[in-house]
Length: 68
Figure 1 (cartoon, rainbow, N blue to C red):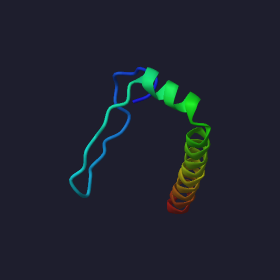
Figure 2 (tube, rainbow, N blue to C red):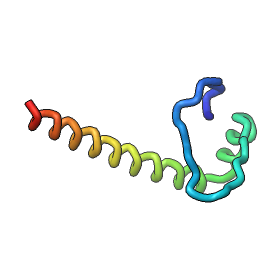
Figure 3 (cartoon, rainbow, N blue to C red):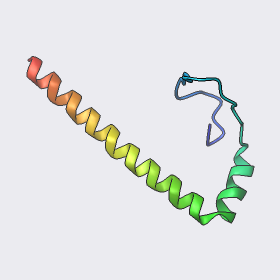
């Protein structure tokens, strides 16, 4: 979790066995400062997911309108 929040924001279920690694906020900040390509990759991924989520939300809203 980013931002120091102790509350989880999602539940994840893995399809296969996996290893989970916790990255502390300060360690992530140092990694991001030293790796601009990582920042760009994460930014691109977040933008793509936001567009996908907005599309799903719009689609769901459109389906809800059709039910009325």
